[in-house]
Amino acid sequence: MSILSQPTRAPYDDGVDLARPRLHIMPPSGWLNDPNGVCRVDDRYHVFYQHNPDGPTHGNVHWGHASSTDLLRWTDEPIALAPVPGSPNRGGCWSGCVVDDDGVPTAVYTAVPDHAWNAGVAVARSDRTLREWRQDPMIKVGTPDDPAIAEVRDPFVFRFGDHRYAVQGAGHPAGEPQLLLYGCDDLDDWTYLGPLLTVDDPVAAAVAPANIWECPNLFELGDRWVLLLSQWRHVDGTHDLAGVRYLVGDLTETGEGGLRFVAESGGSVDDGPTFYAPQALVDDDRVLLWGWAWEGTLRTPEEVAAAGWAGVLTFPRELSLGPAGLVSRPAVELFELRTDELDPAEPIREPAFEVVTDGPLELVLVDPGTGTREVAAHTAGAARVLVDGSIVEVFDDGPPATSRLYPTADTHWEISTAASVRAWRLG
Image (tube, rainbow, N blue to C red; front, side, top):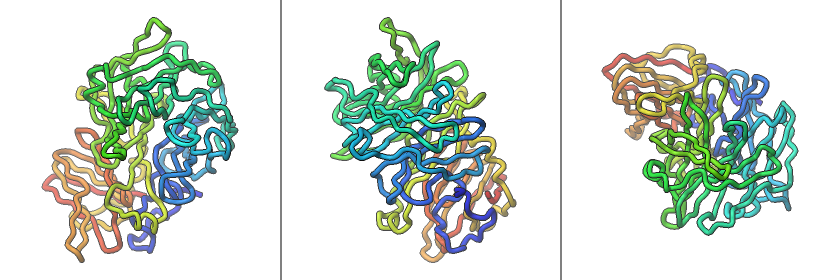
């Protein structure tokens, strides 16, 4: 089943859920969160994601799967990983990555027996279609015996020099975050090498305050190393997903065979209120990034239950380093989504559209019946805004901003600007 299952030109009020994105990666129904295992195998892109097929709430976590040859048209694939009763992943197959292990696509992921406090690293292997997986029932590494570490998750595998390593998020709900480092030249035989990064690094402590650093991504960009960190915080008896930060720095070898990341600078990956847990793909001459856009606070639990879906992945983004830090732009392929040009002076009633301006702009979702006006984007300068159902992605001179607004058959979009502006239907 194709994720792009709607016709290219669908009437705005065709009776479908107008808040549901049509061009982004999401399952046919149920819950979605973190992107996982993003990879390209034999010229086909694969994106996995945290998924509850039984309903639009977090739980019973599987790995959903979509694939594409062009980053535009995505095909729903069979579920890749599923909890197995009585096994170490019986409580869920949480986040991880996919690596090419001597020609064998291998998922390296967080196996949860009961709760995050006793999670471990597990592996699963597939053929090169990535449609059938053999889940190894053995935990490769568990939580280190360290009172400062209560929870670990989200292994991310990378290479440095002649060796393969994995970085893993860790921390304590009442303590401080850190990243753990493992040697894993053999994915069935892991060696703990100590912390890769702690809050002893003053740049990391200032840029990414948290109790647990989740979903670490570590990769080379140009001649520097870039580290992405998702900030998990314990607040008033619950947890807060407090955004995603990046650090630019260097890897240095320690005398014990390990590595340390030394941060030089950092900042925000996305300034929107509903962006978290991204994953990067180092793909030939570029680095691509997908993030999770959650539902925010504008949908009630009853509305989510009635819709039957929650969560969507962002469009793929290309990363680079500029004088001001990390730069994120829509993947160049997304220009091909443009179809008919729209009149930006008229109300827009399209399932998906794009707006480009060379100056300040405000994009507003308007309900004429109630007089409600919800601001989707407010930019100070040149910008590119991509809207698909309820997901709004804004790209300007600073970090992008991902947010969620929920159109209905009674609403329309309005653009306010004194600058030059163009708009296109996307399909």
